[in-house]
Image 1: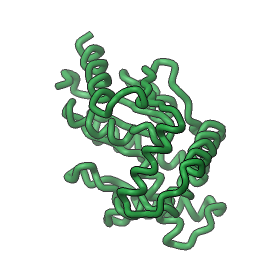
Image 2: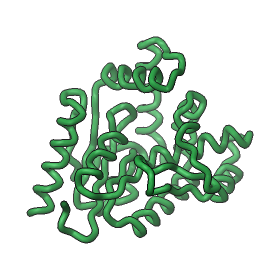
Image 3: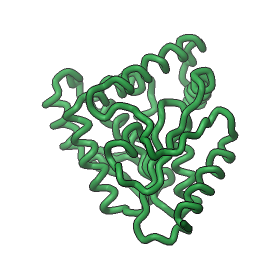
Image 4: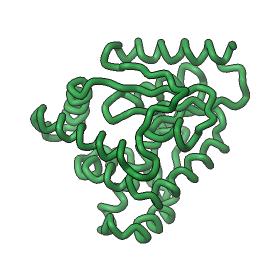
Length: 229
């Protein structure tokens, strides 16, 4: 169990590296809360689609997302993302949301709103494992422990196919999945606000070379070593 009263751990990385699962399991082992910022952007995409908004109308998008008051139900595992007090966990994993989430996340005004929300959540839950693409670089640059998860495109495409199959949705051809991942990486890494980068002080972990349990074991050991130090 971490000895500090406040402890922030950030986990960043591209799509398909296992960030959400690893962050949730790591948080459970360390007795911390788990912040899935990817779920927040997915919820935003679902709201835009379901309310017939034009993604290019930035003011309308940010206004609607602010009105939704995105937050989490911390009594569930994993915490359920809520909009207007209603859970969206099933909706945010559907294919149309996945297609829109990366372009939508590139909107600077929306990212600024999300960063404010995430920092507010951290004030309310100061013992936190937070995962995303800009957590260690932008949202929590002073976090004492930072990780950057990565994996080969083929590994990530296989994981994505498994996720789609588990959701009982049609699985695209492997090459299409690889293309989609490469394009998303390019968008995430080149956007003007909050681009995907590896923080200088983050430990990089190749999740393709380890089992899920192995990744969590490695991160837990690193966290405990730094806390003890």
